[in-house]
Length: 615
Ligand SMILES: [Zn+2]
Image 1 (cartoon, rainbow, N blue to C red):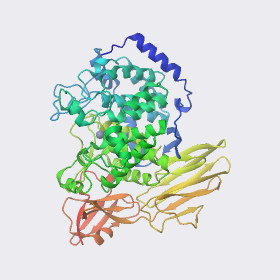
Image 2 (cartoon, rainbow, N blue to C red; image 1 turned 135 degrees about the vertical axis):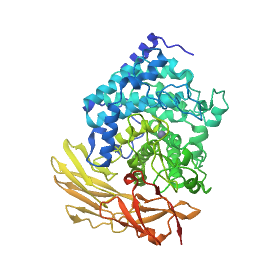
Image 3 (tube, rainbow, N blue to C red; image 1 turned 90 degrees about the vertical axis):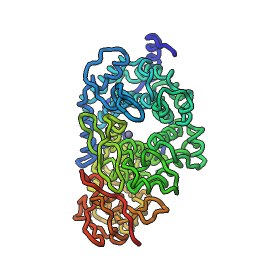
Image 4 (cartoon, rainbow, N blue to C red; image 1 turned 30 degrees about the vertical axis):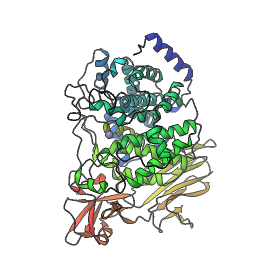
């Protein structure tokens, strides 16, 4: 094991400071140091340029922002201080986050991966600062980075079961603190933390069987996720942490067992851990952006296509019991009676949004946006809020006797991805291409950008998908010419139409594509979209066509109660919304009237997603 002297640390910090001659802009944001080899068709807007307006997305973001802003620094830093032999005041957070002698995998997960989500909480706060400009949030990020810096040492990873898993999140938090919260030390701290973890990492990304074949202290030591690291290594390189991060990224790309077969169109997902393998597709995308490797783009596209077409429930969620299934095995349908752990929701939704955003930006294919809105309305927006003691929502339940429940362990992985995905709602909603603006999500929000020096703002008001329409208003310093591209979901019916200033556009929008409205816009111009939102049935497995869920546009409808319904297809399709904008529908079956609700509207009642239909 290599010892890191203070001299080495200072040297690597100086290298970082030299290479990271970053320009700092509004809200302390840093510009990238290394440009991508690939310029995607659609560009993401900065966090600050998209503001959510009143509605369920803003409420969830605000709750998570306030929650982590108020979480005690000493408690957050405690596991790192303890391992470094420093004074460690404050209470243990408990659950997965604090060291515990009770840890006994796979029976007891108390003390599983101490400090694992620290980087994600830091990342969520840094992104929240980029969105809101909240000074206390920036100060908290910088305080946590300083506090963490004092603890960094190899000692942390001695006898630590998942070093790559935790380090990947730490990396993400530090590069976000640098990029989004203008933290002047974060990259130097990252370099030091990288030196500390390297002796504990294997030479390449390892599968679980490869880890099982190596000596291991207990089963948890075979669960590390080395294959997710390249994404953040590439981002660290691009943000100026130094060239070794590009080399580390390449070293941990899981080409042999994952990306090579996926790139060749072989579905190697079945049996794999679901979220971490979706997350790994984001590493393939960063390899494509940084190096231009077409193989990695193909791997990510094919992998995500397999997820959407062979592993997904009607909600857009995937991976029952966190495991991908063999297509045609009937295991998706079997999961409706065998498990309540149907979809790992905050982590899964976070990974899903990230890979969909990358692929949407490269391809311009609106269907990636369709999959994002399904996951949004049917999974993450219905997640129960975090509780002060770390009690977290983890699994969505699609069992035939389902309910919403919190996870048994406090501070699990999903408590880390929850503040990250809610901070990413804005950047997932709009994109730019040249002068054109893409509207990807129909959510109450405001996007601002500059064109030829003129300030342009688009404000969206909507209660979509509960009302099948949205309204967009422009504020412009002066008339400007550009296209607004509206995502027309693949499910949209023939009566979908677009209006400009109250006048219907004659061309019919094609489903499954972006519909372009180009003109010279004036201040005060309005665009309205009216969606023909059909009722549709979706089978759980292709070979089990009688087990179906009901969808209204992107929205899955859950029958309240867990009794098997005496219902046929036409009765399901005739369910009626109780009033426009309502979250409730009424279903008349052969024998009773049943209320159906969207996932966010469900509280503590039992519910059921899939129904056996007759005929
Ligand atoms: Zn999770």
